[in-house]
Amino acid sequence: MAGAERPSPSPGEGSGRQAQVLCEDLQVVYPGEQGAKPVHALQDINLEVDEGQFISLIGPSGCGKSTLLRVLADLITPTGGTARINDHPPRTARLNREVGFVFQDAALLEWRRVLANVALPLELQGVPRAERQARARELIELVGLKGFERSYPRQLSGGMRQRAAIARAMSTSPKVMLMDEPFGALDQITRDRLNLELLELSQRQRMTVLFVTHSIREAVLLSDRVAVMSARPGRIIKLLEIDLPRPRTLESRETDAFERLARTGVHVLEEGFGVS
Image (cartoon, rainbow, N blue to C red; front, side, top):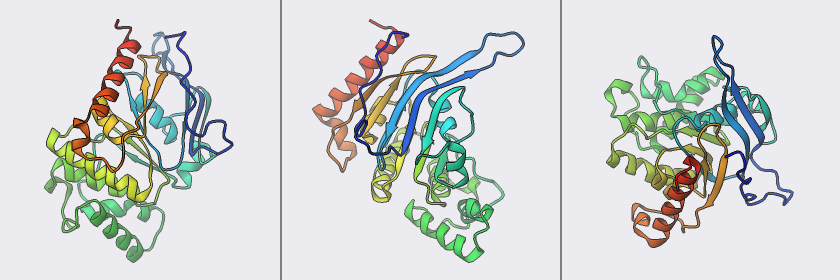
């Protein structure tokens, strides 16, 4: 894919409006261990995301989708290029609590109840107990877990654990939410239900979301745009505009427009793999 074209400019590119998330010629190279060759995880990533947009990242396993999120979360330092959130480096955005991160595993603390798990980021910020508990209760109700404040993670289903993780990530009111395949380990019925809840939540809260998934159909249902990535080294080979009307439901997947977009995504992925 060395000769692949740079994706078409995103909406707002060149308009003078500052993108909320900006990647320019971003590269990540992991050094080889014990004489092994370096691993080129990301190459020439260029992406602009405006406030309130929902962007899905999709591509073959190992193409760098999670690496890109970790650069934006200040968990990995890029080898080259730049990444900015609200015109800040990722480290400044992290310290300012402008970024929330939801992992594939909910990663809740098993010895803390749901209320204490959700309030944890505010506790680490030194927010007074009454204030942080009030905020946590508000978010627990928002994600549909009211009544489970005193439950331990082991007492929750997988979908409920992920809701608690989303509430925790939202506790500091981040401007950008990074979600690394948060529903990948769930059964299809639970995944569908959480897709609908995430659709409603992202629209109501006007969250800017970058969402990693392996499912083209999930990406089309949720997103304003889908960034299709090539096999390693990961590059964005196509930005698909998802022009389906909102609000969306599971029935949106049954329309001709949805099927057309899903087929387009499959074809672009095949091109990235070199499949004719």
